[in-house]
Picture 1 (spheres, helix red, strand yellow):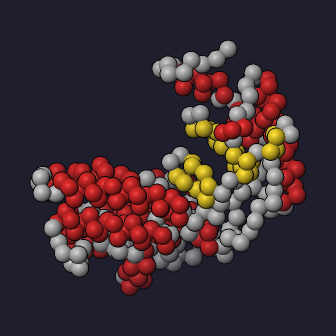
Picture 2 (spheres, rainbow, N blue to C red; picture 1 turned 30 degrees about the vertical axis):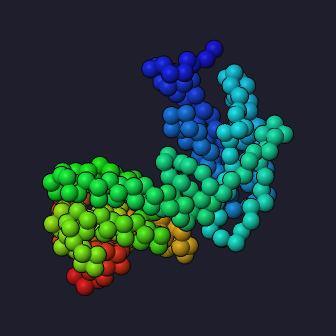
Length: 314
């Protein structure tokens, strides 16, 4: 039994074959979530107690081994890795995970659906890779600048630069390391508009109808919130007082900086700071998107703090 490699039906047949794996594993523990994407399988396991964590993860792999045996499959240990996440950069992982007496290699860096994750979720390695890609895109734009009209150059910007920036920006867009990407973006904009290296880019961004990096972060994050409103709760669910913030999204109290910079918490904070006339369009994604784009282009916010400062004034 097997799936022929390179065939059109191969990926579909493989997915059908392993489709019951998440359902079989996820019900074993409340601390476990198994996700599938094509042939990429990831097990996310959390626990506050390291001893219990090690015991339960060992039991989990015993269940995984049994599932593989039942379905005539085997685990390729050369392509299986274990990574422990921590908010403490001084923490040294001591937990070991094994499968059939074979130790699974512990790593501090891994690729997940095109995103480079490190064990502290700093996003530094991912942004370093983006820097290399965006510099290559900048070279292409600089080389073509004198050969093609601005409108065509703008299309090349969106296909070679913007598409790279856009992917996963809601995760890494508010990290300090992203400033290096913004410097490259401004260099590209100045090159496209034949501007001097010390010339302000705000008017250039508006002229090209392109959002600065942090404005794009606000745009993408706000769209994520609007498209997933079922994940969030309004303040009116927690109190009946009719205040001017009663229709805002409820922001849960958290202390950990990693959580505050995460998509869920940051999404609430950004959405609540949007102008009321834009928030009122949240039930119509198309109108919300158009109004938000126009607002962010007009503001051309260079930093997320600029955006928050604007909202505190108005």
